[in-house]
Length: 141
Image (cartoon, rainbow, N blue to C red):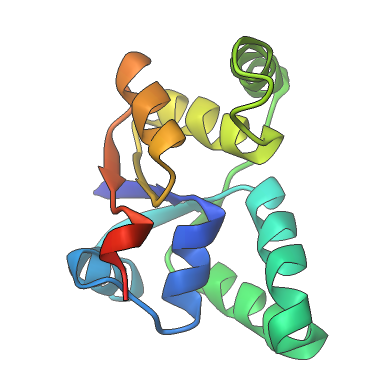
């Protein structure tokens, strides 16, 4: 089964029905339980605080709970994930948020494809052999 890990911007686009055409097949696979969405709590937290001002607490919480009800693995971070994410953050202290570092660490460990609109994540993912599906924000409507 294919495994996907979404950065916060990609997850937000999918949850608010602003799905790029290139990702619609992946999203349908997740919704139809033919692919696994790996979700980590730091992404949940970032998803909340980046969307609450625009959509309000109830809507954002409802969307988070809804995505958790899909074919989602709520991945529990461990010490190795934390250390690996820390190594990425130490290497790129101004480039990545800590959430981005956890996304890369978990994707590397779980051999998951990362969906992102962040070119920095794309570039680092290629260096550490993480599969990436990148769409430039400039190509999104």
